[in-house]
Image 1 (spheres, one colour):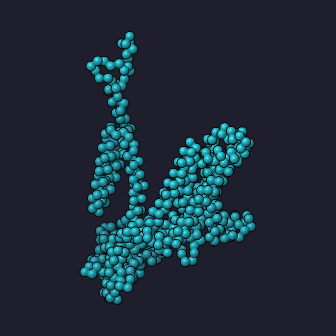
Image 2: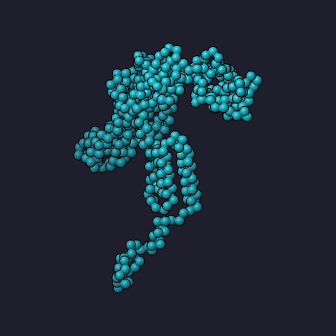
Image 3: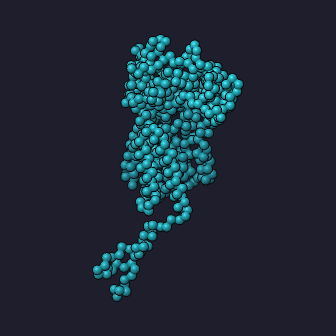
Length: 546
């Protein structure tokens, strides 16, 4: 009888033999874990690994040239690990996790770390490169023409768009007749076969370059005047549009005193490594400096410097008001509409829902531009429709009300959809039970519907707050941060911290990347703290109503 009950899957153990772990033969189990590779899979694997190898080789040369051996070691180790991972049948979960992890590091972790490191520097206009770059720039910008300076026939060219591309000088040596191309990095001689030279030495064509005609060069005369090409004896500068001269630098670097000396005025600017600038005895700094680590100076300026802390904290208060108002108003309007359409007595709900989500289906940047025109003082629809003459974007509070109204129109469809889904998930039996107990509709909503609704929607409200806290489009496409006070064109009445940061980094008054990175860290910390506290409260709420 016992033998008849034994089968392929039986747990009966034969004396002296180890029990089988599975009813499948060992070869079948191995085949299940090591499925044969198809031709398509093999081709995809070869292509992707070839792409990895190509990217690694392409990235290795700049690292070697810059002598970044740690980066090169990381690159080699990563490439070898990827080849090992995908050329062996082991580590199946890692094959799916590693690509996402690499993209997370490259596109999330690395930018965050780079931003954080920038916040501890003076990186910005005048402090972009190394000290040697600053010295070259100072000497080149001080070049002046002196008697006997060599004159060169000049042609202005570019490798890009004649109107916007980077400019270069094509000059012909009057003695040897050789043609050279020059930019801010210096001069480089060109082969005779690459250029066409007219009588008088002027270059009319050069391989790989577009020579500007007189009209194109005239339109960019300021750029041509500012271009300085360093040479062994000084620097080349233009003298009009057809001639260039090799002048002598008035200011020169003296290594013995680590300073810049002006041969005309006799003034001296000594290098100050703490600020990354050459500073005179009276405190005057030369415009060209270099990038240095300034420690916590930027953070101190944000908190204590009146010129920065005042606008920062004022913008922060409005930033919270905007984020809370945008999230709260859109939630209340979306929830109200969802409740109205959730009523069983409502007819034509599908049609209403389609119409109500139209703002959500429109491109937000386009709608923001439309709303900006609708709030125009002279011909805007809002003033004409209601017979008003309000300068919506010219006054502080009217501009703030306008952007909140725009956000209300753009944001309520999302909250309406979310609230509709959450309401449909709440059993009607719960609300019917409260009505049987004698509760009014409002009491039923307050005691049952709203708490259950908030349990489902709270994480989305937190996410909406975080999004609106950094909603640069809502401000930039409507008010651009304005209106601005007369004494501070960097911080406007409707600026968020993100638009204030953008203006610091790319403003017309000069870029301050280090300061902008510092403000970005404050933004990250604020949003992280608010989100963490909110999620903590949400979890407690879930425990109460679970």
